[in-house]
Image (cartoon, rainbow, N blue to C red; front, side):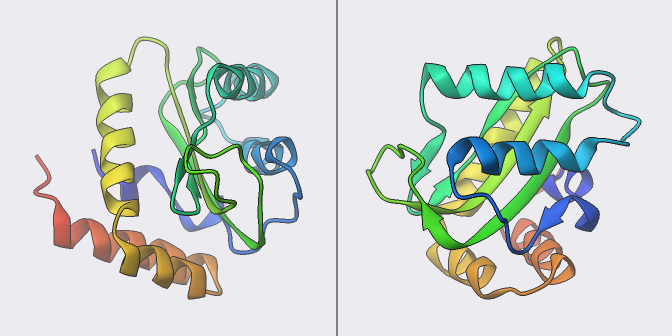
Length: 157
């Protein structure tokens, strides 16, 4: 499964408004208010916040990947957002975060969920890719960067 298949331009916020970890996560979850893949939006929101309490998903280098598994979704969903001003996400490296990728999978779809987390993390380890994302101004530009980055790095089965 490709990141670019689950992340769509209408689920990308080029300039997040949130000023805290909670606000940013809520802003990304709210993108799924009328999405047919989501049966229980508040259940999804709660699952992401509960996972965040276990350990911060701020993985470092200005990037966070809040994620959860929830039966509030029918399928894997994803959203991405950028912050103009980085925020404290209690990241593992202690640095503030400005790039946030939300991933929520169904409880029983653990394999695809873990593969996507790994793929996103590998893509985000590329400094040039992170810089290009930071410079992008529109959802379409950001989406196209994900498509191109994925082409460079992964053989899709």
